[in-house]
Image 1 (cartoon, one colour):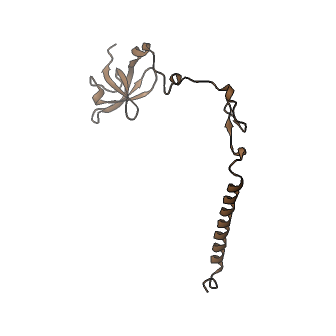
Image 2: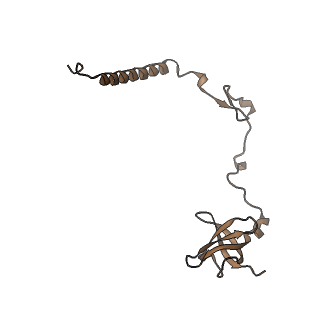
Image 3: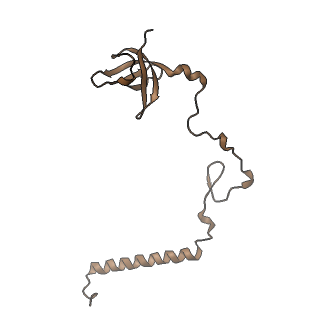
Amino acid sequence: MGRSHETFSKKEVRKKKEKKRQDKEKKKQDRKLGGKNDESEFAYVDEFGNLTSTPPDLSKRVAINVEDIEIGIPRGLASDVNETIRKGIVSFFNDSKGFGFIKDVSTQQDVFVHVSGLLETIKENNKVTFEIVKGAKGPNAVNVKIDRE
């Protein structure tokens, strides 16, 4: 008697669930019959980076020495030592909060400076020399002193 009191929407929901279960069973049977040895599912990448359906020719393989692979940015040359000390102009400095920014003259990049990186007290528009170190949020200026030149 349970089904005689079903509403139309309940019958529709039951039919949809049954159809979904049958579709799932059909897909499962299709995979069992012919899905294992079907070569058309594979795609290969050729030496130019294009997708192709043919497997690569192993005779054209090139051996690569693992030590020759460089990951990251190449290290600078020894001549870059003079460039570690940079020149800039203090664009903003807040004495009460103890931080500010220096605009690098060569790259026009703003570099954060904290009072702990100062060797002398600085003010806005002072010409300074400084070194850059990597901070948590970007480049930081350290060893900041007023440029007397």
